[in-house]
Image: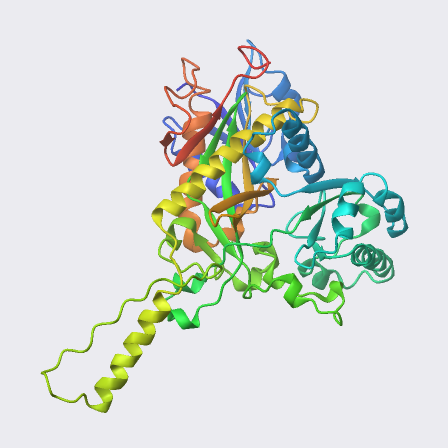
Length: 488
């Protein structure tokens, strides 16, 4: 590998800054690192920095006289904006209805709105199909509202009727008025999920996934805690945080150390939680929102590796397994059991009965989920590539994304992953100290896979790596050529 200079700048993300430095130091030879770009810029330059600090003109100026690699694609709204993502997937499915995205993405509608009184017109226009669905009045079907450009759980709301949705937007308008009147409540506001509608025009509505896989993270105890008995378990909703690396034009890698991020309280379906007397705006979202940014006071309590969950009881799908008669305690024929032995035998029998009420998550289940995630990632990036106005992969760029999935039970009982959103510059610091090592390995893998080949004398991509194969815990999910042999 030839010498190059690395511009590294993460002023608001000290953990990312350290991980990037460590990853670059693992290269042989390590590059010279700078924290500001000189004029003129070095001829052989890596920009591994926050998006706003990158010199995008340098990215586009890559040519024979200069060699510039940047840590972000310049144009990628088709992925990271919820309303654009919804649109590009819908367009893709129109042409390819057999794609895994047809079952791997919730029903979604996108729309623009500034004030609640605009909803009446939307019901007969962009939201006409949704209007018909809601008017069916199925008590088990709920919907979730998401601002198109908000992140970290901001603005997420559950609703069941058109009146509920109107009330939510009226609430947002009141929040906007209150914010103008009182600037001093900002600290508390940062911890809730409020948004200001006047600052958010784009929204999506998704069908709320009503059959989430429920586990109890307490079955993987932390800090010396005792693993609870089965009878003391409570089903918690969780989502998968998948780190994905897109490189050049274009390869997509899935980091196979996937995180499971759990809600703070046990799950209760919204249909049971929200009675007639309770306003939808008063629904406790703690059972439904799994964003770690909304649970910072919990620290690492709700964070597990997906692989750590092997053997956990699936609390969302109890079944009556055939129960075999438990063996009787060993004793001589004709000898009566004393009361203590009898009680112990009954306790053992009760524990065995509890164990047979639930299946457990197996290694095969985990591998199946990873395979599904990899397939959905590949199709999602294919869909984005086809929306070329809003996603333009470049041969001299790479980018790390945090992609969220929720796991549900399908109609036939199988586990199904569902894509929720794609996040650029993911908040990796919320992973917590216990699992920081997976981030260290991830960033070193990025340096080895995306950076080192670019600056090698041969300037060749990583060798014979086939789709589906894993190296350095990166599984190649997609390998396609965009816009000609050189990707321009």
